[in-house]
Image (cartoon, rainbow, N blue to C red):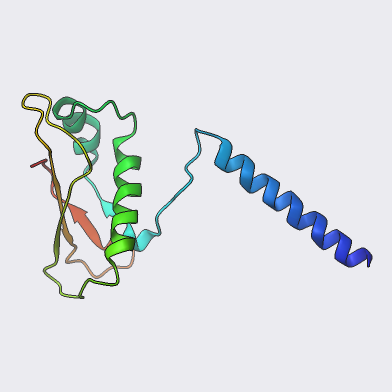
Length: 126
């Protein structure tokens, strides 16, 4: 009985810890697996996007990684494994000048190293 109580106590503590992490607005609630993360040029998220997009997003890099991960996770079953795969993603951003929707293009990486991410984003916004 003592072992079962100790195990239940550990599980409760673990659940509380997990809930605290979710409630903290500074911590990420969703982190996509590395297979679904996109290789993004830092210049795009730190210099270009804040100037070209009117949405006030603090962390473009994190937003794009999470949104792309969820999108790729949803479309994973439908996709084929072709090498020349390209995806056009609408992140909900709008152009500062015209107010039109903007899109980002990601394509499958050609590298075969394990350390490289599977997907790479073009270094411009369309």
